[in-house]
Image (cartoon, rainbow, N blue to C red):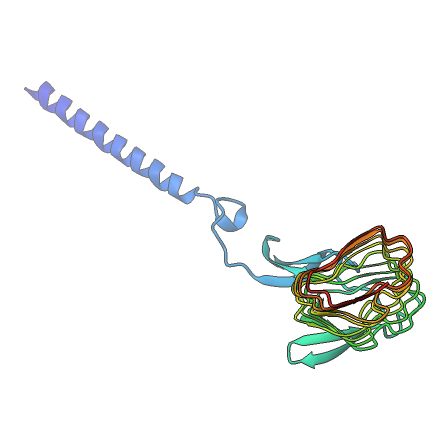
Length: 287
């Protein structure tokens, strides 16, 4: 009996020792948990907005990019576009609270001009009257889709100008806007035009193919005077009058269709004309 009691006490004592041992191990493990501040488990932190960093510089024709970086971890927090700068030296004038118009300014000796869509955060919407008047150095100009108005004589007398783009957002082109642009080889007037001035393309004698925009009811006197390179002209329905000497000296023009509704037409000195389709409404024709 005594031996049994001794064995029971021995077992109980062993159990107590084991319990104390495992409790001590667990406590030790808790004390050995890595400290986050010493490179252990990383907890999510609150980002601190740092400085904006330019990652791609804007050029005259291409936008740039800038990013805001977290000063703590270096992660990118935000990104913004830096608008293309356009040609240096152009002059900008506020035409409304949120819009600018542009003119040549000190860029008058550049042969290639790029007009930006934005200037100082505001849209460029107008080519100002006489903006590039008689700029004989200008050969090409890129105009953004934000532009809706070409002012009076905006490119008049740009005798070296060969190309220009006019987007479908343009609604108004002032008088003589492209008058005497003698080197201009192509000019597409979009159907979006609501207000088209007089003598807009008079003297553009290097154009070979021209579509008169829809909505025009009268072709002005001398509108295509001595366009010697013109081989094709499209006159839309709705035109009712063709002015005096409108096609005078268009010596390369081979055929022409006068739409119904036209009551007078003048086709003087068109020496190559071989095919003329006349409207039944035509009352008089000079040839």
